[in-house]
Image (cartoon, rainbow, N blue to C red; front, side):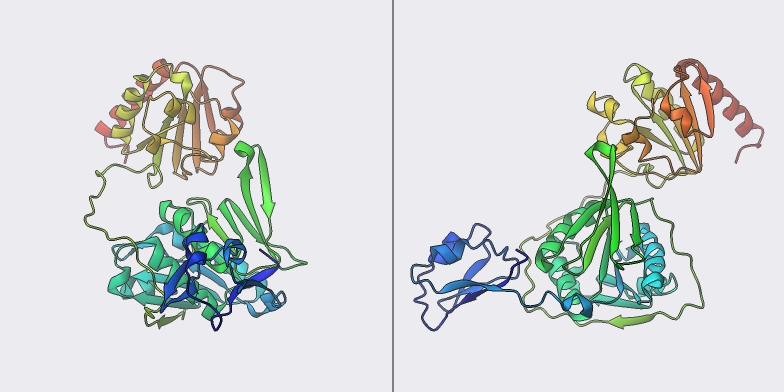
Length: 403
């Protein structure tokens, strides 16, 4: 793919037979006025080249390997729901500001939606030098096709060298589609980003092989350098009322915008305390012995206004739903207090909670790895320790000593 840039069709000699359309495995060719048209999402696989009976289709070699120098700046996709910015965008701005200073380049934020202009001001006071706003009814609901098309046009116009997206459910779906459109690389679920002082390339670090290896990845030959970044890993950009970020309202260009999905209805999830946003998370592991152990954790969480988390083995056993899973294959949390009950401390789990402000570990095995990262360790049976802890907390709350 690095050796080719575009597909070329000799339309003057084309008979309009349409064989290339049926030959394309990705549906990236359509007939327009009896002639084939190559869409932006073409993978350059070459299937149409070999299929054309007249030999009128060819892959054109790229002559733009030096155009990476044209790209400057760090861009952040500001995810929003109902006009409310997702906190991961502020984390990306915090890291983005750090990267842009090292490169001596501007920091951009890109905001898509409908009725979102007020939210743009928050991005400006969080450090964005420019906030690009696409406010249009077509963008009211988040859908991959129109969002990827709009962001693709933005990148081609503004040419940021780095593009960061939150590794949320939306970001993990949108990021790969956008990277494919831009024909650039994408590192998923990053936990670390830094600029190489010599090459000025973005070093993108992410866990690999089940968390046993931390892989550092670079993208030297294409732009932008793209990464999705885990939520609750980076520090949020602080508000600064003196920031003078420019808000730029972009007009929607509907040409080339695809929209294959129509949302008929939206049913919000039941209101529960999210483990990602909770200040207190009480998690259980296989050391609980059985599923009913989570009832004890739920009681304690209700008393402390916290959320219940879990290790992967308990989810695999069906003791608790996947939405509670903490770790590499679950969610990353950063609460003020994390209580690990019967969790041994496998590296996969630690990667999702070790940045918590205060960690209390309860485990019968005094050699459990969890004690190495715990602020306070209690060697004991959870079924003996937790009732005592719950009783003491109730006493403190009753006396007004716990707030």
